[in-house]
Length: 259
Image 1 (cartoon, rainbow, N blue to C red):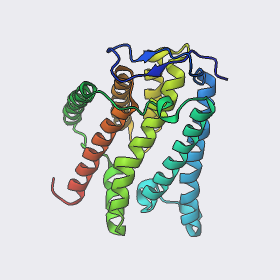
Image 2 (image 1 turned 30 degrees about the horizontal axis):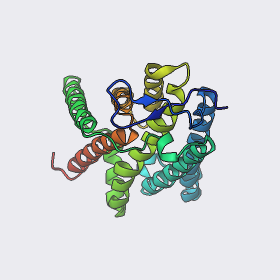
Image 3 (image 1 turned 180 degrees about the vertical axis):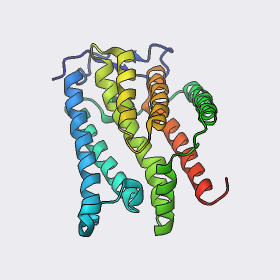
Image 4 (image 1 turned 135 degrees about the horizontal axis):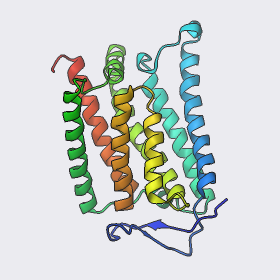
């Protein structure tokens, strides 16, 4: 159950000390409790996505399309993300915390936003240089195919909402919000939490090849550091939205023949 010390993020805390003890709040969920809640939320997310794909393609059940080939995948993704967030919010309330505070959804400091933008720009530049050195595409086949299918079906607004808003919000609440809260307060600690969440984050992106997973791992490590530095999941949500916006814009430019 809730066996770990209480830690509350507070905007304005000194760098390196974004947490302060608040005795009036209960302890957050412990490592194993956090893991079980995470598995439940992720399992329901997967059930919604997989169930929707099967239901919408029942007539061709033996030849189900890949995610990027299903024009309704962005809608399935958005609904599954909403359910996942609801489960994690419920878990936060059962822990006796205000939902926003437990998940780190607090207003960030301006200097943390500036640091996040600068760090993300440097990382993206480094990864882009590595991409060209390895002679790989800047945008993955999954992204271009998903855009092409949504465009053909007239569902581009839905794709933009799912990829640039719904996915970043849900993923950051899951990894840098809920999992970070419980695991960082456990014996795993902050460094172990950043590493473990980054491994899981990259492994969950099965739509990418090894290089795409490597990129998501690097980005996740940065987001974990920003979450710890700022004490705010809002910072990582905004950074995640920015990078997904750039990736989707790049995919659009490629599909439209602009690059």
